[in-house]
Amino acid sequence: MPQTTKPPDAGTTRATTAQTQTQSPLVDKINSNTLMILSTGSGLTYGPMAADLATVLNDGDNLRILPAQGYSAYQNVRDVCYLRGIDMAFTRTNILGHWRRSGEIPDLDQKIVYILKVANGEENIIVKAPDITSIEQLRGKKVNFNQVGSGTQMSARDIFSAFKVGIEETNLSASDALQKLKDGEITAVVVTAGKPSPVLRRLKRSEGYRMIPIPLKDSLIGDYVPATLEHDDYPDLIPEGQSVDTLASGIVIIAYNWPKNSDRYRRIDKFVNALFPRLAEFQEPPRHEKWKDTILAANVPGWKRFDGAEQWLKNDREQQLAANQDRFQQFLTSRDPTTGGKVISEADRQKLFEDFMRWMKQSTAR
Image (cartoon, rainbow, N blue to C red; front, top):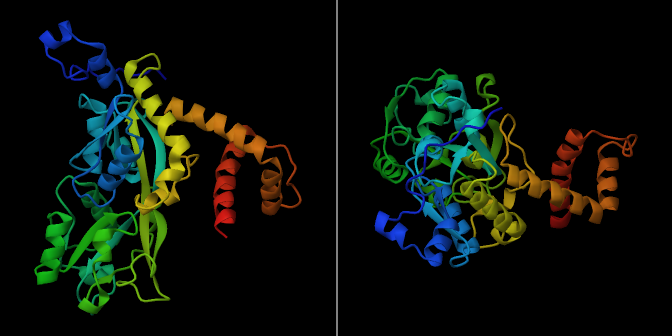
């Protein structure tokens, strides 16, 4: 497919005409090694993760990650396509699916690439009423879907539409909505947040709060996957020995599909080569818990991965397999003892490698 060129980025250097005429090597270095990444205004998941990127990867003028507060995971997709100066953004796989189906951004598949899938982000419905235990019981009630145009609003509308439950929608920020819930002015709050969310961990069952289960409806398959919230995720909210079924979608970092010979491509490639080898540092405290779920080789079906990330993963896969041939063979045999040594295609091998890395992580944890 032909590559689409993004509108000229007049804001890349952020320099005036006079500054450009006398631009120093230092100015060039600062601008050529700085990347701006959009999080969202909620601060529940993407903001802390963007801050983690800056904290771990920033290296003076050699590499600087500059987190910026976007409006929403939904708006972030449009901003990566059209807003000058934006290099990357956090969004979710279900939102990418909505944008593609809408056709509002022509040739979206050519304009957007993903750098990595970070993890899955869960949907949460919080109530403060002991008699409400299901989505159906929220019919006709005031339910907060977060702010207009937010990714949470889109997900909440998906969910309640799938269950054919009509509600009175309110559009407050998560913190304002939780206060209204506490005061009894609304009945429920929908929150999209990677578990465990520090905000939701403050809620206590002893004070009347509870989570409502969200079963996976057939109409939601493709954009969402089943997920489970455990006592260990929210010990003051979910009783020990119990769990709550919910839905999740993939948290991804996306970028514009810049041509390989461009400066913008080079910068994103530099980000990949800084982040990927240091993933283990993100999986230790005090970094966001969701980094622990990150498998660099995880694919986002139907979307193209950034070429620089694909190349890094290919090189790493070859090195990992060379260093762990015996363990990889053990893994193949554990999946199917009768065909553990069969010849497999490159596509199957890549999928197996992703499963292998998960198996390795689980084996190490035991």
